[in-house]
Length: 343
Image (cartoon, rainbow, N blue to C red):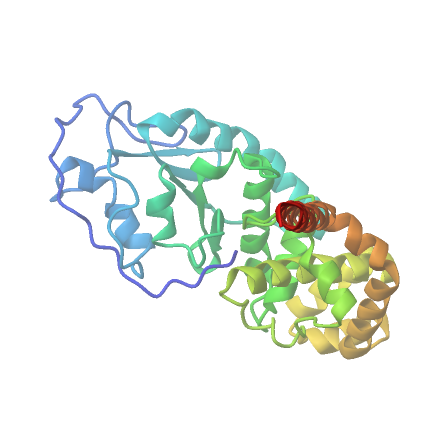
């Protein structure tokens, strides 16, 4: 998720830890058991000094309660608490491969140094996230990726895929600067390169997009150009639509057409013009064709298969009520017969 910051960090005072006189910092080195420091701040707060430089728009307390460490190596910076050092080193290890993958896909250089903030507690991460469903977001104007690592074990997330998703946001905004990138395109492309993984939690076995196709109640792409809905159902549908529409472009016009659209936008063409120039069809007509394709693919059988559990649960409840009513009627009939016999 491309997250727009509009707040300022306030560093909470914490008890200082003794400095490590042997700690040294440089390329490929982490300060051994010593937080990142800056003159004039208490030791735990020093780790957040650079956050004050890169996140001047946060208005929350520091995103963790322990000491903060910074690992700089291989063209990437990772900020973390001590328990997450193995995760930080894993990010350093996988970054070159992820970077190569993205550069190969788009033919663009990822010529920046990303800063990854690893949040240990989901509660602290949510103070910065745009939605409770969010597990990661990117801040392209500052080359920042924030990850709620406490939820990386939730399917279908993996550290590599979610990292690749957020780096894709940085790459797109690095090269497409002359025109705005529609939010649906930003998220759709990022999901495409990360094997369908978004940066929010939703049950991919229960598709809201299929329901929208059956009812015809899609969210128009023009509505999703500047931002996504904040409510959970609307947000999930927006992600599903974004991914599906990018998949439609690739399946209908080819992968090269999608890359050409992005190249044209890099050159200054707005998305409508870029789509028309690359695919010889207007964006509006392409959207209509996508809706039609979804409606043909999504029949009532698909709807029933996606909602089988709920249907069975409802039928079970109705059968239970029916059995209870029959039992009550039977008991009343027996009591009436007994009273007639006594009379």
